[in-house]
Image: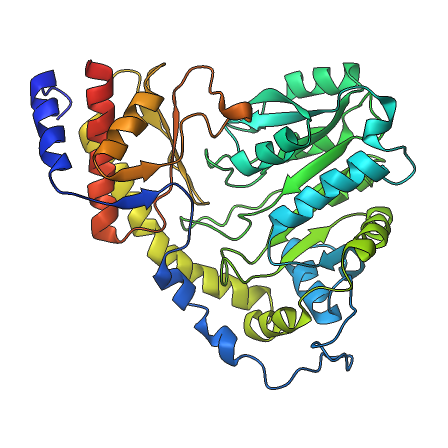
Amino acid sequence: MSTATSATIASQYDAFKQLGLKLDMSRGKPAPEQLDLSNQLMAALDGYAAGDGTDTRNYGGGVGLPEARALFAELLDVPAAQVVVDSSASLSLMHDVVVYSLLLGVPGHAPWISSGQPVSFLCPVPGYDRHFAICEQRGIKMINIPMTDDGLDMDLVERLVASDASIKGMWCVPKYSNPGGVVYSDETVRRLAAMKTAAPDFRLMWDDAYRFHHLGDEKIGMANILDECAKAGQPDRAIVFASSSKVSWAGSGVAALAASPANIAWWSKHAGIRSIGPDKVNQLRHVRFLKDKATVEALMEQHRALLKPKFDIVLAQFEEYLGQVEGVSWTRPKGGYFIDLVTPPGAAKRTIALAKEAGITLTPAGAAYPYGNDPDDSHIRIAPSFPSLDEIRQAAKGIALSLRVAISR
């Protein structure tokens, strides 16, 4: 296929458009079959009393039910006293941590905005567009940090944070990163924990969204960031975020925050103004359904059985239609929800537009970069999870043909 002429590719693309597809691959949504794996959530409750007698239908419990905190403590390998279980979305917790830090300051420090100087965040790229949206909305300057096979360009990170006190934080998706599938090496984790920062109130926003979301047989582990920060004498540096959003029901899960005792007290103080308490009924039914780490891992094996064939199909179609095309590459993730398709410079926007004409909606070009600006216009986030197997086979072919047409004109 790679030796086909431009006219042949254009003809195949035109024929593909005639199929009249309408596929939305713009977000990494679980498929209905994945959501069905957790349907027993509706029958998980045999009452509303938590283990300590709390009536979960009532107010209170700002840090979460004790059994919900214990569950996430086991999943995140931290003490239960260092866990808060709150809303259904970890993104909400991330947003609030940023806002509290800006307006109220982190423990022992003035509000980030009090100096009157710009606040900056380091942003690994390609990265997660919703992280960037929080910064953009709040006027936080974003600084691109290139990803590497080991996680990040740590030499650049260390140089920047050591010299610029305006850099108050950094977004991290340490395992199976969105969209590249990168896993931080233990050395990268330790360097992040121990690095010298000009800002004493610097924070690592540690979005551990895909801890159990393996695609292959290998169950990749990594160093514990909270332990490493404590060892390095920086116990308050990292705040870890996680949720059950892609474990149970994406729109009705539970989210958790793990951090040092000082950060947990800080969070509780400020979140207590925002809310009288989270949805404890939902927390209780998740505890009754998910039970423990072993149960979660078994459930994620069922997710893997549904997801891996879709990723395999995309990779096979890309190999068939793009395998020998100069300047084109893609990631082969061992976990997570995305594939990063890399085009020749200047071809991503055109490819996405052509795919749209063929009935395939993709994440906008540039979304994986701050301000929506991919300087090379070369990254396309592929989200294989939601379509059926037949649909994803067609979509992968359509995306490949769209790219071939985009670079042939």
